[in-house]
Image (tube, rainbow, N blue to C red; front, side, top):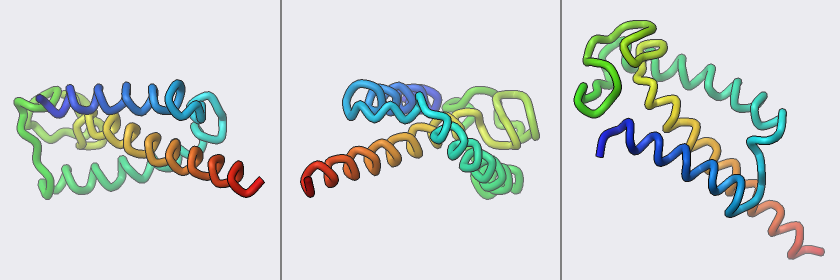
Length: 111
């Protein structure tokens, strides 16, 4: 399975978890998107630095684009493959959904 396919599956699974499984619906709130904007800014800085310097490399057959490391274009944004943004979104959303769900569950147990 390619990194692209894994990233797409990860995003879809995280959205399903948020919307229908845990029913936290974080992605329907302004707070979530404001927090995610801050997170994605730093994700782009970190990923850009690691991939732009060649510290992290990707198999061109597993990602969109080629093995050319460019700032923007050819399947990359700030040097990192676009899949990194999708995968990061899925990881952050899943973590926040778990945190919110467990917090609500704890509140119910105390009541």
